[in-house]
Length: 196
Image (cartoon, rainbow, N blue to C red; front, side, top):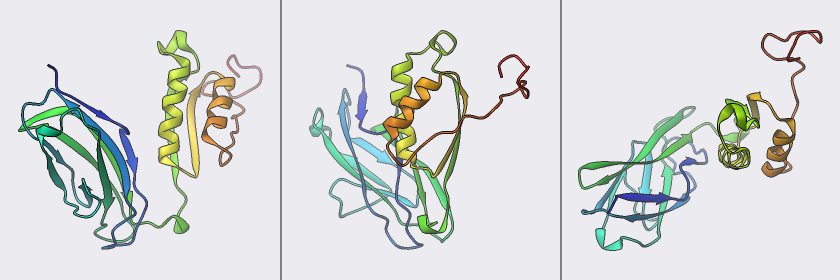
């Protein structure tokens, strides 16, 4: 049987907290099958993981006897210093064998009332399945989930081909967001240029 870990979120943005102060806790759920050893989870400081929401460490072991069960994992940061952004990965191991599944972690000690968060993303032919070789509806759902989790104040997207798909994504993200379309794109800086 193949080793698999099903994870409720592949990206987690943890709320900011000041240096040496534990952040609010974010929760994900995992379920694993096909492992022959205990499952080892490892991340880097200042990120910590827990199975009970009380005892946090940068690594933990989940008994192989829990195979097939939904397991809640609690994630937080304890920032080392103020005014820093932290990135890490929660890695999964079957004993000493690294598994392909990962959870990407983002944390900060820059408090939200002291900053504006921005995000830029080249989505490549978003809304044009013949060019991106993708399912437009699924791409929109995945992009929406990622952007909601990022919770950025300003998001700049490139290669949006379908304005109706952008409108749907904006509605899916909630009332916090609206959109503006640039007047021109690369190589189309005037109304007479193709692609304007």
